[in-house]
Length: 356
View 1: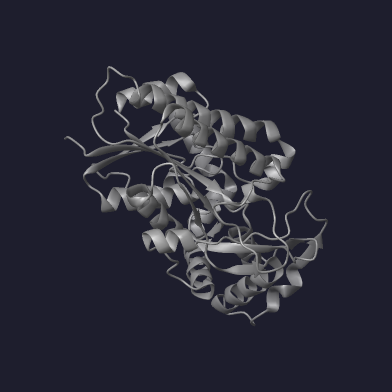
View 2: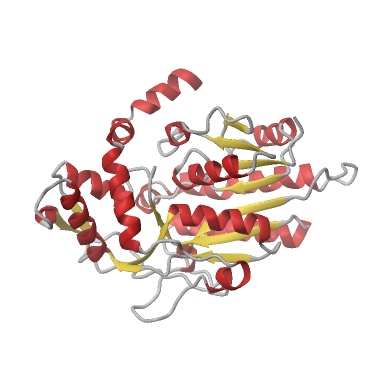
């Protein structure tokens, strides 16, 4: 079958990536979606059980740090568009192992950019379709904000404070450099903290839902006063779909939830929601909160201004946070098998058996 586009989605077995893959596979049968994932700890094919047999879906296990393999995949699948989500993304892990973050987030992105350049911009090869390299980044590249009414905009200067955010900032610069130097058609979006189903349970919301359920400690950095802007993952996936199809080449778009919460206030909302849904006395699990030494270089506040995305492309969040957190808590409580499989690491043993 001839497909209108062959879209490579990297990191498509991960949290955000699986939601993006699902939208594109279901919404665009005329596109072939090639999901490339290394299947590290955060990549889980169980996230995509519902579409794994779709005729326009292909899974490829590969590492974006292998340049020759990326060239092979671009050629074999005639890749003409890229949505790049594959990344090491946990700040605590980056503090312990910055080299892995530089390798994957910087060199991996560079490998993909160069594979795209060689595949799409070679003079004797006539383009079979329009091309786009869409790079998904983070608000953490902007640094931190004071406790006031300022917001990150697309023009905010970069000021990363952790190895993770530094690696993402570097990858953003390479994407822009390939656009400016080689004319590669690119677009970048920077998002705020995502939450929702299928998130690996080392991140705050699924970790705390699981810990509350099992009456385990809830470790809170410092006094829990750091502020984050929370974005429902399905809203983020909708924004990616919109930017991919209607965004301006060479441009940047910020995606946020207009939804700021102090960590401690967010945690108390989760506690009340989980306790209620488990039939406990509401707020009973607040006794599990334990304050721990603050993370090194812990940014005070992130908050994104998504006005440009709203004004130019018509996107805005679909859910208020209380509604989104209710849906999220219910999903984790109703999908305990998925959570147990992830936390036990059993899925990794399966991948080792299947893929070596």
